[in-house]
Each structure stands twice: as structure tokens, then as C-alpha cells.
Amino acid sequence: MALETPTIKQLEYFVRLAESSTFRGAAEQLKISQPTLTAQIYNLEKTLNLTLVERSRSGATLTPAGRDLLTNARQVLEEMNGLLDQAAMMNHGPGGTFRMGVSPTIGPYLLPHILPGLHQTYASLKLFVRENTPKALELDLLEGRLDLVLISQPFGTPRLTTEVLFEEPLKLITPEDHPLAKLERVETHHLRGQNILTLEEQYSSYHQMELLCSELGATIARDYEGSSLDALRQMVIMGMGLTFVPSTYIYSEIHQPQGLSVRDVENLNLHRTLVLAWRQNSPNRGFYRQLAELIRSLVKTNLSDAKLSF
Image (cartoon, rainbow, N blue to C red):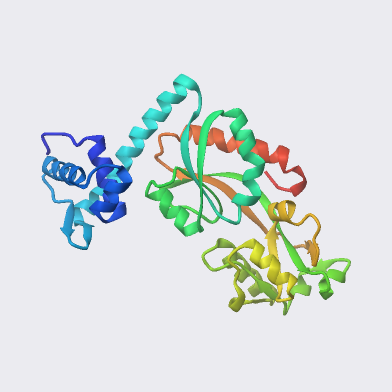
């Protein structure tokens, strides 16, 4: 067992080096000199009596021991940050800076309705918001680059905790001159043989649409997968197919659906479930549950016309 204890700063330098893969890049991010970083990593290795980093001209690569200890180092830093955040909350109420990830199919259509209310309730709270794909957000959350994530299910591993915020229906949109747009009622059998546009496979809705098409005899337009909800909308207007989009998107973006028809499909319970997620052992998990409850309350008030379920 090591006779000395690594410092928090040494662990921070080690984690940043692991993420950067080069001493120069990590030193620039940490705003310290490269010799200082090198010395601190050496001292950490000496304290632990382990070689953590393989040095080469091409960069820095973690040894097996370094990879094994990286998760523990991140957890120690998270606990320390959580201690400081908790102390700040005790002194001044909830506040500080938290890094929140959001899916691009959620953030632009939900955040404008909740961020003002969050700021009003927690004046000293700052949210650094980052958009990314679901898989990237999950990895960033697990590895500590994000504190919490706003995303749709299915999502998560045993190391993550999720708090359900609400469910929202997915509505069918068609070109305004499409035969389905002229029907008084659209039923599931009307979708047989239709071309369904969907987001790329990295989004959970892709698999949802894949299953739906299989059940109803529709076809996924695999050559025209959209990179965003706006892209799907434009492809529908151009007559390339039909698609399903969440009601928060419709509420936010389709006030006057020029070129489009927005329809419900009879007896089709198609929806997505939005959750707030964080690491199971996060020291701020109590506050995150409060945050989830406040978000639910704000959504109920500010998005009452979007027909969401709680």
C-alpha cells in the first residue's frame, strides 16, 4: 500500500491526460506548462508505485494499470466536486455550474420552456448545455464529462439513474397533398406500404420506427435517414415519405404547417419517454431529483397544450 496519498490535483492532471492523449494537449487545457504536468504525473506514479502512462513521440497511452485506475480517479474527483457543491448549497442554496447533455431532438424544443424557470428558482445555478447523439451523451455521462443528461428512453446502464419527466405522443406528418391528409380519420392499416422517414440508426426512435414498420407493413426509407427533425420535416414537404415527430417539436416548430398535415393515427399508442439521467453514485443525486421535479412542474405549466403525460 502506498505510504503517501495522491493529491486531487494529481488525479485531475491524470484524468485530463487520459482524455487528451498528449502531454502538450493536456497541459494547454489545464493552463499549465508541460514540464509541470510531466512532473506531477511522475510524482503520482511514484506515490502509487505504478507506471500509469506509456510515453512516446506520438503521445501518451495508458498502461493496463492506468486504465484500471482511471475510473477510480474520476470517482474521487466527482466526490470532491460533489462535496464542494454540497457545501456551496448549504451556504448559498442550490447553485454552481453543472454540465448537462441533451439530445438534439429534445434540447431546442424543450429547454426554452424550462431554462427561464430554472434560473428563476435557482438564481446561482448555471447549466453548461451540450448537444450530442444519445450514445455519445451516455459515454460522456459515464466517464464524468457530463453531470446529467436529458434524453429519451431506452437509455442507461446499471451505473446510471433515470428519473422519468414525461411521455409525449409522436404524431404523423404527411405532405398536405398526400391521400392520407384528406382522410377524416387515419387508421393503422392506412400505413401499409407507406414509405416512413426516420432519424439515423444512432437514435432510439430509429428502432422504434423499425418495429412499427414491421408490424404495420410499412417501409423504412433507409436511403434517406434524417440527421435532425428539421431534415425529416423538409423531406416530407418534398414528398419523399411520411414521418412521426414528437409533439414538443410540433408545438415549437409547426405553428402554421405550410406544406404539411399533422395527424393522429387511430389506435396507435406511439410515444417517447423523456428522462433526466445521472450517475448512480453521484454526490449530487439528491439535488438532481429536485431538479427533475422542478422540470416536470415547469413542463406542466409551460407546455400544457402539447398533450404530454406525467
